[in-house]
Image (cartoon, rainbow over all chains, first blue to last red; front, side, top):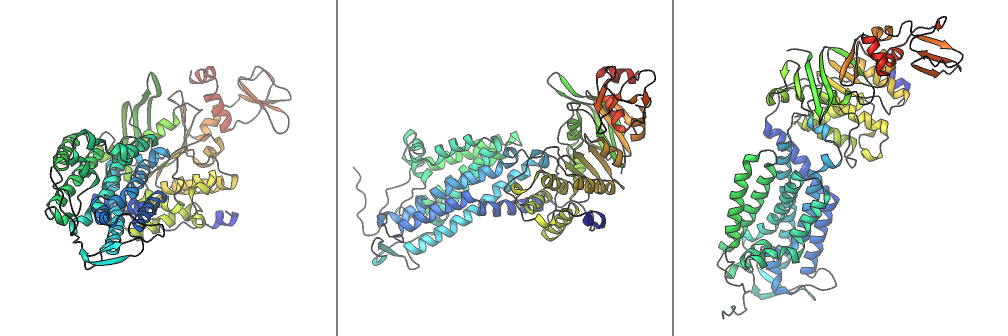
Length: 307
Length: 288
């Protein structure tokens, strides 16, 4: 700053004071900022990169091979396999965003503002939709690469991709929501943990519980196969397991878990919401606990034998 | 609308310790300085006035609003600019991003108008050129100015500035004085500081806090006058003085009860403050 600047500075006009805007306008402005920051967050980008690499592996777009083609459609959409990497890092990125005021010791800036902590939590919850949209783009791209617009299945992803005109896979619209919803769920759990604790070790513990496969399999071991399936979104080859009903129930289950997590995050500011948390969790357990239906098959494969 | 802060027996207790122990003051338009030694309760009082901290006891009304009522508290926050003492920053935000984020928290939802306002306040603190720089790359003084910029958002009627001039170089301090004195026109500006010369240059009124109490409330001239006939200069240190220090000329300036024949000098606001906030015995004597 120069001395001239000190003496000649002319203050610009101050804004005209107006009535406070509606709460929803503030919530939306915060949501947009948080959503954009999430999409640019290095950790989230790392997760998306991991998911993209997984996608490339599955579709044979990388030189070192691919997974068994027969599993790919369900792993892309049904199993949420592609987005598991992205979900882990989405969870961490959202956790860090939600706890930044406490980790950076910047709370005094926030506490003196008319916008409440609850509104900030609501915005953080809504901002995870941005992660869901990124996941939707990824899943849509993967589906196009694997199945194509006409439903012809890519069979030889190692040397190909070679399209087998005799094998067709009918992608159902609901399937495409599973991966994005899984990202939204991961982000919502990030908001939940971040609302209640700022400690990074809580996030690491949460990540282990939620995303490390052996630990994540615990519900499957403890309860039954249905929960394990629901957790991972394992509705295989939906066309052969009774149309959209199993997918819809699994989507409902994931949405119920996300709703429970979101409500539990908001309960940080309003303890009366605990009742709603319990209700949403009950729905989730009921829906995800239902049997996933008969084991799926791909067209052209024999149906599973029942002992 | 009332344009005052009214405190009545305001208290804040942590455990068994009354950090603010019954402060009763009215603060009106203009720049009011808050002086006090470390631990006197300045920052706690400032945080209560900034609605960040709830009082343990007493009553506090700001701009005619009762802070016990959530809606009225929110209304106060809409008219408040607060600069914390040692704020933490989101180091990976740019200067613009951070101030813009606070602007949203101040309910500025129109993007164009908000960005215009963010640019305005950054210009006010001479940070327009570094708006795109990440906060982690800023010096301590520049970060202070970021904190000041966010406090100016929305042209608030009440400014609570906790040690705004610390970490600033002399040129920046001069700029801050100019800015704060401008802001004092038509607004309530409360400035907490350790710098008695800032108080002398800026404030129409000064309050000295000691042990959680308001030990003095008056003008800077009245604070200086507390040390009238109690400051003397000598070639050597006089152990009878309550406080003494060596001046740039190599002589000793003493504050306390002067010996007979001492060469008395005009007191400054610092002398008055030191007498008041120094050893408890001096304070009690003055109070008596």
